[in-house]
Amino acid sequence: QISLLIGFICINSSAWTDYSAYSYFQIVTMCDLVMILFFYIIHIFRIYRMLTCVSWPLAEFLHYLIGTILLLIASIVAASRSYNITGLVAGATFGFLATILCVLSIWSSYKVSCVTQSTSK
Image (cartoon, rainbow, N blue to C red; front, side, top):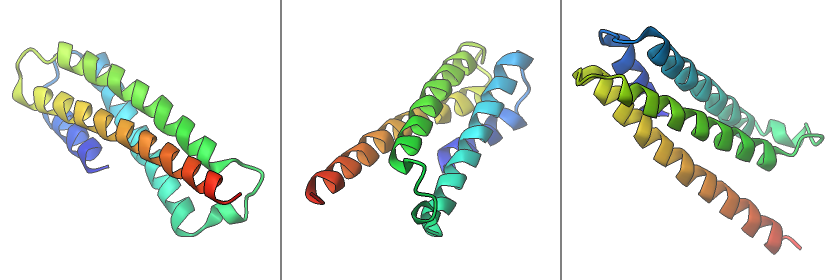
């Protein structure tokens, strides 16, 4: 979350060279931040125990998968349109870092849910 927030701040505080590329980056980072916060709140307050009609591991997996793909696209577009402006390059770099961290999160949550399901039987 911190790398997404830093990337958003870097892009937001820099002079933009292409409005559509950086507004897309901002939208993707803010949506990812909000959805990550949403899943944290669900886990902290254990809301997933009350809403059993939703497969929460699947929902979290799909959120991270879709968010990671969109973040990778946004980071590639932001990096290609940065034209060596340091704030834009830094924002794209933190976007790539957040993409790597999201991939690690997907892998760890999949590993934990598979191990938990296989040991519970």
